[in-house]
Structure formats: structure tokens, C-alpha cells
Length: 261
Ligand code: FPP
Image (cartoon, rainbow, N blue to C red; front, side, top):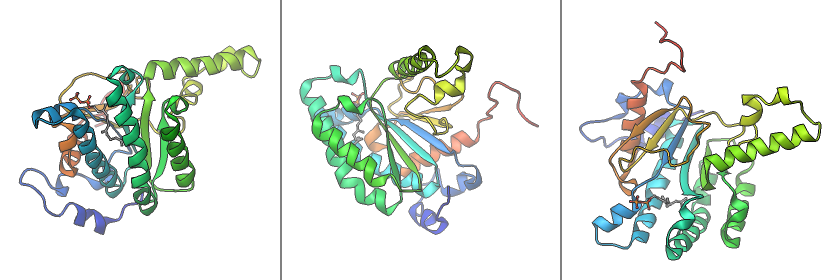
């Protein structure tokens, strides 16, 4: 993805002691970074606040992650915002999150226009409350002709359900004679996932120190490098993002083969 070097240098000007833009090779930034944003509740509880305040603070961190990704020149940023299991949270928290998703999208559309960001959703958004669904569909339509970074928001997403849905689609095609069983390949299945057409993530970041995948992108993360930080999501900054990219660049990715010399 094309990147504005001047804006990038300015964005990363006030470096803390331990990290700066010099720590990363700008010719080798990952194409797709995915984030499990975790720790909003703990961030709020630690401050004696209601959990909802953690989600509100999480919006600021997400805005910074989107801007950082654009500045670094990523092709895709994807984030896990709401899983199929998150419906089990207290009703008030679910309602707050659905409201926050819709309101944030409306508020952030100017940023998406300004930065030429195309929006995409991973998950079953048809099952969301009417206002959230409507705002999401508007966001899709309004950013459809943007040619810059793709921002993929996983909402009402579960990886097992996604894979089962893809398998069902292929089974229906075979049953109707549109394709032969032998055509059920990895590529065919990947083409039926919510992420169809996107590159697999190169780097997965999980905040708040949890070492779990939580039913996220099980198919797509097969060869992804993981980076886990204890930082809680609302505190995750452009510098934490840079630390993750620098760590990623020190890994040796072999995709099951041997390291090239
Ligand atoms: C995990 O923290 C976070 C979520 C379930 C929601 C993610 C939502 C945001 C970051 C708000 C902004 C997002 C959008 C798309 C506008 P948690 O509640 O599981 O934290 P805990 O593990 O400390 O309880």
C-alpha cells in the first residue's frame, strides 16, 4: 500500500525512550494486521468505573490503531469487536456495545473518507439490531469505492460458524451440480469465508495478556505470527503498535518449510 512518508514521520515524532520509527523496516511492514482488542472491562474496573466506560475508552484506541495502520501503509487492519459468544454478556452491556458500534461508525466516517479507508464486516451482521445493521450497511455503501486500506470489523463473528457456513455453501453447490466434490479445495473454501479476497493476517496482536484465540479467524491464522501484550486495549497506543511490528520483523516465518539462508 502506498504510504505518505512525511505524515508517517510526523505521526511518530515524539518517540519514547525504548522505541522509535527506526526500529522498523518500512519496506517490510506486514500487509494484514489483526487485533483481538481485550481488556476494556479490566481497564474500567481498575479505575472504579463501570465496564461500559472501558468500551468507550476503547473507541479512542481503535481510532488510533486505524490511523496508525494507514500511516504505516498496511493493506488490511482487522479487529475483533464482538463474538457470537458475547451475546451472553449482561443485556445492558450488549445494548451499549451495539449503540457504540453504530455511533462510532457514524462519527468515524469522515476519517474513513479522509484516509480513503474501505470498510468491511466479518460476521453475521444481518442478525444485529436494526439501527446498527442500517448504519453498517450505509458505511459499506459509502466506502465501497475507496481504494486505500481495508478496515475489517468482526462483529457477531465466530470462526467455527464461519467455517461451517462456508462448508454448507460448497455442499449446496455440489448438491446442485454447480461443482464437483473434487473442486472442494482450500481455495474454494477460503473463497466462501467472510474474509474472501483478503490476504491472511501476517500478525495477530492480542491485548491484556490472554493466550487464547477465542474462536477468532481459526482458518486464516494458520501461519500468522502472534504477539501478546499485557497492555489493556484502551491503553494500546501507536507506540505499542510499533513494538508489535518490530517484534514481528524479528521473527523467522517459515510457513512449515525451512528458513531461507
Ligand atoms: C473486550 O474487552 C472488548 C470487547 C468485547 C468489545 C470491543 C469494543 C471496543 C474496543 C469498543 C470500540 C469498538 C468499535 C467497533 C466501535 P472485555 O470487555 O472483554 O474486557 P475484559 O476482558 O477486561 O472484561
